Length: 157
Image (cartoon, rainbow, N blue to C red; front, side, top):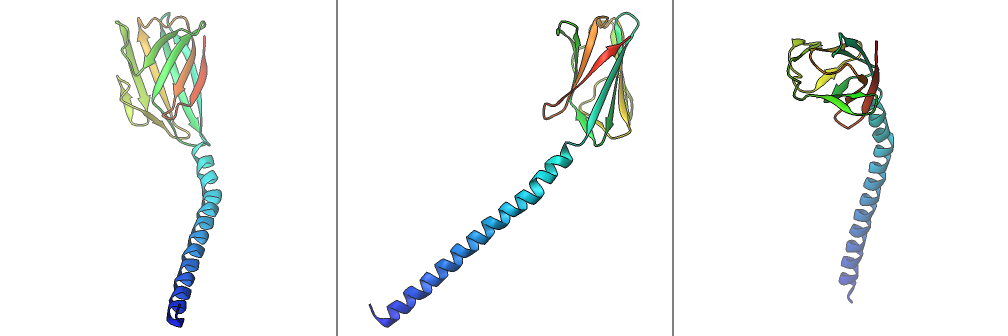
């Protein structure tokens, strides 16, 4: 091996050490960024809570009120159960004949579910189910978020 070959080998070795060192610094930087920012973003995403209250309307109807606090909550479905855990009605879904829905949210008044309900802190969504809805035995209301988190409330009076 000539002195020229040794010099080239040394240069290649130095370049490899620089590349390895750069990769190590990059990996350490990514770990630090994840540790600092990863948990913070998850915490911020989960600070909101949803309060679900409900009351019977007549003998078969129901009013459901959902109010957010601490963060914006998105609701993609509302399930209504009786005391035995049987599902009586799901929104969005087909209403029983003779049952009507009126939904009140920050955008106005609607007669259908209209997709996901985005509830900001201090605002709310009210759902009135009136007529022959078959909800006289309603006991529990569950509002479901897109990630599957369930917010529960119970029917009063």
